[in-house]
Amino acid sequence: MSVLINLIEQKNKIEESQYQEGFLLPPATEKQLIKLQENSLRFFKGTISDQFIELLKISNGFSVNGLNVYGANTIESPIYLPGIIEANESFYEECSLKQFIAYADENMSRVVFNLNTRLYAVIDRVTWEIIDEYETFEEALLALIEESCVFE
Image (cartoon, rainbow, N blue to C red; front, side):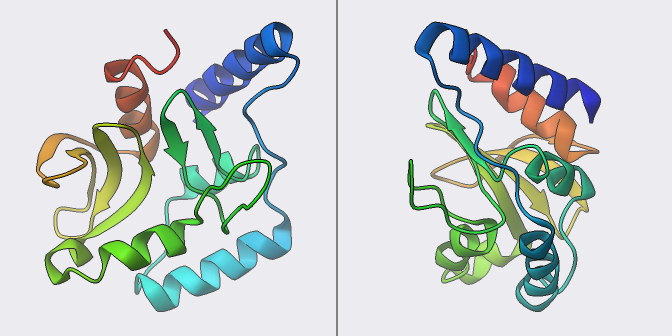
């Protein structure tokens, strides 16, 4: 996970130097992470990615250049950013989407975990068709960042 965290922290420092503020938010608290784990067991009938939890310990979600990585809970300020449970609640109104846990989105794609294949995937944001599959959350999010030119 260090590649992803290093990239995000490096890009946040650049944003801070250029714009006097970065895109990272305060880290999720231990209490928020425990509540998230409990809620994910109820809502998803399983746990969420350990790599995602590690990212939340750096920043409780973030939004940069069209990429939104969901937080442990919904953030109202300084930006609106849904928590992972809240983001997935709206998707789960459609039964066919219950096979996915969505972790992040950008203008054209999402990063999800496919409960059927047990793989992470970058999918089309509208059709939910799989674009590419990955073994880990980190690989999927890095691929989305690169393919979407988030930091270019």
